[in-house]
Image (tube, rainbow, N blue to C red; front, side, top):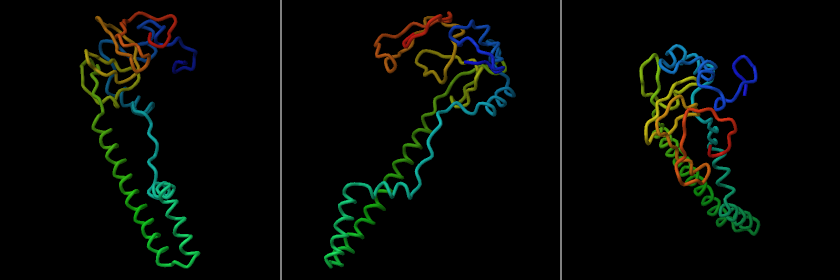
Length: 195
C-alpha cells in the first residue's frame, strides 16, 4: 500500500489513528469539506462495485439459440427441409423464432427487475462533513470520510476505527464464526481473517 506521494505506507490497520487521518487529509471531528468530497469523487469515483455492461439484445438472443431445446428444434427444421417436409420445417422454424423472442424478452425483463431492486437497496451512511453529521447514500462516501456507525448498521465501506464502545461485528459470512467479534481502535500488528 502506498500513500498519495507514492511512498510505501504502513497499512491503515497497523498505523495510528493520527497517521491515518493525516495520510487521508481528514479530521476526526470535522470530517471533510464538501469541496474536498467533490474533488475526491472526481479523483476516485463513487463507492460502488463496478458492474459489467449488460449484454445486448443480440447476445441474449444468441444465448437463447444455444438452449438445448432450441438446438434440437433447429436440427428438426434442417432434417425436415432436407427430406422435403417444407411445411413442417417452416412451422418448426417459426416456433424457434417465437421461442427465442419470448425467452429473450423474459430474460431482459428479469435483468431490468434485478437492476431496479439493486438501485432501491442502496444503503445510507452517516458521515461527518463540515463538522456536521449528515446522512448520505453509501455510494457517495469517499476516502477520508469519517463514518458514524450504530448498532445494526451495515458498514458502507472499508474503514479504520477511530473510537468505539463495545463494538462487535458479525463476520459469519467471512469466517464462519457464529459469535460476534469484538473490535476497537487499537492498531493491529499482524492481521488474519476474522481479526
